[in-house]
Structure formats: C-alpha cells, structure tokens
Length: 227
Image 1: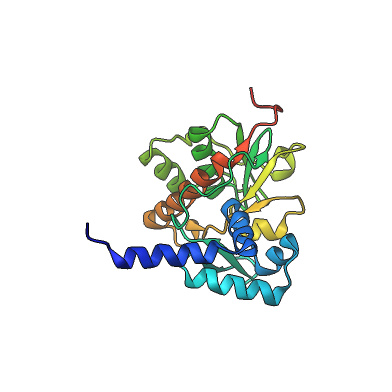
Image 2: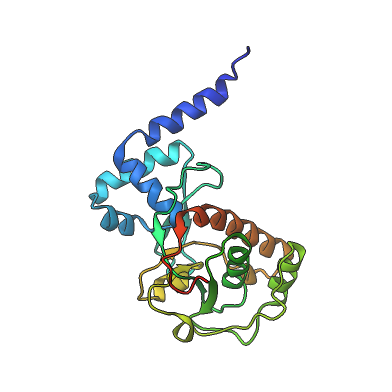
C-alpha cells in the first residue's frame, strides 16, 4: 500500500494542533460561530497573549482564518476554515426552542440562513434585521430558487418584533453582531448586496449552507415552540 505522505503530514499537523485543551476549546467555540480574539479570551478565560499563541498554531495548521469586520473595521474575527474539521461538533451542546438569524437589513443573508435551516432541522427558524429593508433582495430570492428553496413569501421584520425569550440568536453579519445586546452566535458572512452580483450571493449561500450544516447537529429543541 502506498502512503500519501503529504496527506499524512497534514493530518498529523491537525491532530497536533488540537492536542491541547485550550486550542480544542477555541475550536469548539468557533464551530458555533465566529468570534473576535477578545471575545474568545473572555469566553474561555484565556489571557490574550496565550490566546494569540494558540490561534497562531491553529492558523498554521489551516484550521482557523481571519476576516475584517464589515461594521467596525478595527475589528477582526476568527473563523473555522470550511470543511477543516468534519464531524467534530459536539452533538446536542445547545438547547433552544427556535433559531433566529439576524442581519442588518433582513433582506438576504438572514433570509437565506432561515430557509436553509428549515430544510435541515425540525427546530423552527425565523429571521430579522436591525434596520430592515422594505423587501427581500431579488437576488436572494433568485439564489434561493436556484438551490430549491423559496423566499417568494418572505417579508422583512425588525429584530425587536421577532425575538422571543430563549431564542438562539445567530448574527449573520458583522454590523448586526456589533449592534445587538443579546446573547448570540456570530457568523461573519460578507454582505453580497455590496457588490450585487449573482456570484456574491452564491458565495454567501455556500458559506451559510456550510455553517448551517455545522450548527444543526449541535442544537436540540428544549421543548419550547418546537411542535
């Protein structure tokens, strides 16, 4: 049997990166959503200088990457690289009666995320915006349709009119994450409407689909509104 040494070396690097409790805790947190280094430091109780060391090793192993906030450009967010850690999520780690996806205008990312969630999970989903637009973006509707989903009847809504107690809130844009004052997960998904191209909306859809697939096994209903 021929051994593919480059693949073995890459896997060994991944196992080494995860073979330390603090780094595994960082990855467990990033499976759920993106986080700024300071947010991770506070959540995990790890000093910032030590966190930076662990993050550097995870970056070198190809597990973690950085992105610049579209809201506050001084901030950066850490995120897992797509497909870097297949099937690593701790099943049933989060309980919630409903999942609410929030972005600024509730016209694209949050709508697509809610539609994707509804296809993958029996736990109810909703979407909302911190500054909702008048309508769902036409390219979001078209992108959903191309992937077998429908936003034909979707309408925008303000987050204050949608959120209920115990909802699991997922901010799917940087600006909404930086504006919300409720407990939430954060997905740093670039705004496709900034370029307004079909390719940008398709990239956003692919990013959201990957994240939904990672989160679904982690969330269990707590018996609230899940019928």
